Image (cartoon, rainbow, N blue to C red; front, side, top):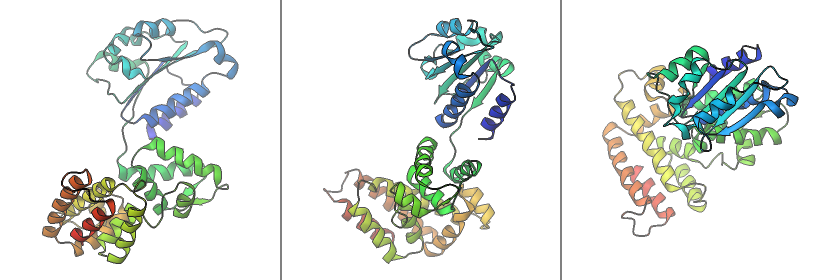
Length: 333
């Protein structure tokens, strides 16, 4: 996220604000920035007396303000970190008087996860004027591979496109989980090696050949043999390949394919923009569109809704995952 990089660069230059209000649905960027402030504003010697972590569920706004108005001991600044501040959502506006005239020797960091700060209210405007706001939004899944690649590149690493897509297909847009898996990889892989699907399979446990990413592609190509091999693998490893997840991903794919059929412009750029997919995957939709006309796609979407209910135990009469997968494949192809 470019805004995080900008704030980090400002702090490194010594341009440190008295208030950092970090809020939004994506906890990863909030954690990264708060960790950076925690580790870089004070020296290790200064932290003992001048760095404090408070938790929103345990304190009041008055407690926070009381600590923030305190003067640092043998240091130019003190850092007050308020984690889980979303627990103070009902009283957060009471922080407004402090935000109007913040203590210049205090760096107050509010970690307000999974919540929005009302931009119409005075607290937002005062922090904007006297401190730093960061709205941390969830990344759409089509943006995650590029974020992943840039993150690794900044640390001197690289990743193939397919390896990045495997991680996203398996972990979604949960940036914290992706980051944790990448940390494991970087610990076991040598220096500046490019991360490949083989590395993902060996060290994270995601099969490079038998996954929903490959199943979707095989179904789009009407490659019955390959699709059958994949669902057989899924049936043998049900815990790692839940049926409901497979149905959900296929429903998303065919819903986008229906949208593709409705587009007037089928150029790669236009399709990628309209379907919010990486341009790398446009060819898959072009191939699938030739194999599945619009009417057939509508029928498949209806089947997938049916199969989703069966996967959740409604009308399945105790069918095994193996039988559900076979029925799914027969109904689609």
